[in-house]
Image (cartoon, rainbow, N blue to C red; front, side, top):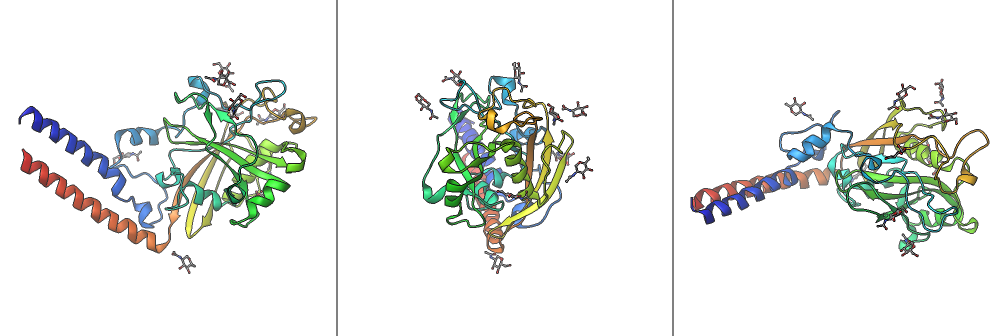
Length: 311
Ligand SMILES: *[C@@H]1O[C@H](CO)[C@@H](O)[C@H](O)[C@H]1NC(C)=O
Ligand SMILES: *[C@@H]1O[C@H](CO)[C@@H](O)[C@H](O)[C@H]1NC(C)=O
Ligand SMILES: *[C@@H]1O[C@H](CO)[C@@H](O)[C@H](O)[C@H]1NC(C)=O
Ligand SMILES: *[C@@H]1O[C@H](CO)[C@@H](O)[C@H](O)[C@H]1NC(C)=O
Ligand SMILES: *[C@@H]1O[C@H](CO)[C@@H](O)[C@H](O)[C@H]1NC(C)=O
Ligand SMILES: *[C@@H]1O[C@H](CO)[C@@H](O)[C@H](O)[C@H]1NC(C)=O
Ligand SMILES: *[C@@H]1O[C@H](CO)[C@@H](O)[C@H](O)[C@H]1NC(C)=O
Ligand SMILES: *[C@@H]1O[C@H](CO)[C@@H](O)[C@H](O)[C@H]1NC(C)=O
Ligand SMILES: *[C@@H]1O[C@H](CO)[C@@H](O)[C@H](O)[C@H]1NC(C)=O
């Protein structure tokens, strides 16, 4: 082969490789329930090694922090705990910020967390450094409890307060890091209620798994598992509470004065790690995935044929 031809070959070959994992649907995408989302035939090397790990990196190990960065705290430099992680070992569709195809926003609606009231963003943005080389990064957005009404329910949350979360995506792993809490209403300046960080995390876990989680009864060994649904997507969430990422303390925690109690510090130091699979999908989407399989296969064959013709 001439050098030009081998360069072309390499380019086409790399295109084909990148095609494979994105166009061929996994068994989960075909609506077949799987106990373990461990399908590694066509995964790339990086996604393979990711699956063997925890599905996230501890930001604190690489110059980041599990506390967010909040402007204008007193004293300066307080932050809010990133107390829930959506692991990158989850079904990859759930890791896409989308309301379609079972993506993250649909998953969140399965637990009544919606984008903000009529697109109005109230409250100050926070930043976080996830130790992924991106430095201090502004939150992707804020989600609020929708009171069971995905259309205007988050407006009620904005004024009455309640469960809300801010989230960031760790660029090196694709894991979502969420700062969840229970805030008091708009009139009280969006403070956090007593024990509001642990409660926010545990309400989210409770709603995702259909379990009433008792705060201060969870340990670094606690696990929960359960299902939630929205738009005919059913998700299975496996939860593992993990210690060692945050401290069991009030140190550096924003609103610590209203959050800590006489006996307990502002946070218990546990992070709920969620690993999510999609158990079932709307029937129409299974057809879409099937046709994308054959489309992908056609492209693959056409690509191989054109490479053979060239060399
Ligand atoms: C990948 O496949 C190999 C061989 O089938 C299996 O031994 C291994 O456990 C799989 N890895 C994962 C992460 O599922
Ligand atoms: C924090 O304050 C600084 C200085 O006033 C401003 O430049 C920055 O945009 C603020 N950050 C956020 C996330 O609001
Ligand atoms: C990132 O935030 C930390 C904590 O607030 C601050 O000390 C640091 O100066 C910020 N870095 C940049 C580049 O703004
Ligand atoms: C679901 O979240 C709401 C608050 O948004 C809370 O009142 C309720 O107890 C939670 N359910 C469970 C099972 O945790
Ligand atoms: C709280 O923990 C105790 C001891 O581990 C257990 O017996 C009890 O069932 C737990 N309560 C709830 C509501 O999970
Ligand atoms: C979890 O708790 C157990 C029992 O207290 C302890 O032995 C273990 O070291 C803890 N694990 C981590 C990762 O902190
Ligand atoms: C984060 O790392 C610093 C030093 O690198 C350490 O002092 C601190 O205790 C760590 N924080 C947590 C929550 O592990
Ligand atoms: C956190 O520390 C408090 C005492 O300050 C203790 O009661 C509680 O059991 C600890 N929680 C965890 C999860 O380690
Ligand atoms: C969703 O489920 C409902 C009830 O089972 C069914 O009537 C509807 O056709 C389904 N929609 C799709 C898009 O599959």
